[in-house]
Image 1 (tube, rainbow, N blue to C red):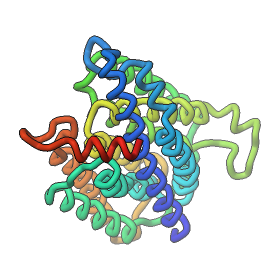
Image 2: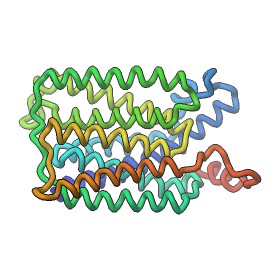
Image 3: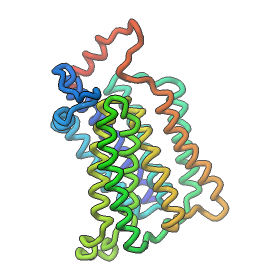
Image 4: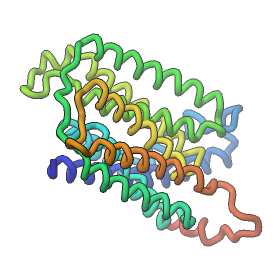
Length: 306
């Protein structure tokens, strides 16, 4: 349990740091494209903008951290109940919020700091209440369903997000979270891992669900960072990657709390999700400074970063 928790915490740190670095790269690219008038007719970032964002050094380093976080998160998903591993990993919101103060010039309100405190407290409750993880053995038909749902969410979600344009930041964050949640479920049920069997691994639809959900989730998260609040987008991602996987883990994969601690697990889980939603609710849109505010210091800081 302890090794699994430490692994999940390390994954959270990687994801949180990577999100802020990706946001820095995404914003630089989005500003350049907007200045050149290269946005979609709905006001969202163009495919060119998203591609160029992925070529900035900040985004590249952030992506490397995401891959490291993915590996650590996958290991944690095999060692802990999904309601615990996914929630601890989603605490990267705290890392994202704190680092965004320095790298994006964002000021967190008292309500946001309070919400972050609620998330941290909820993680302690969850860690206290968590019991053994389930086996993860499921019928192959379930793996096919996971692949079908992942394709529907990522492909259909991308179309809807592009149609909504600048209004789709929270939706893009939520869909990316659902993608990462599907990835966590896929890692848990994946065949051919223990013991290792390459043939069984390549024949498992869950492997391709992981690839679809991971790539789609990464793309939608990039779009969300370009067009909306980094904390708001990340909070929506947190909801998507914790609620559904946590329920699936308990209802279908055999995850459980310690005997007599089910109520504490429920309270911790609800508080963690509520705290993440509160960060999105109280977070001010970063693209809309207060009237009369001096933007020069922030622009100089962003120029120094870039």
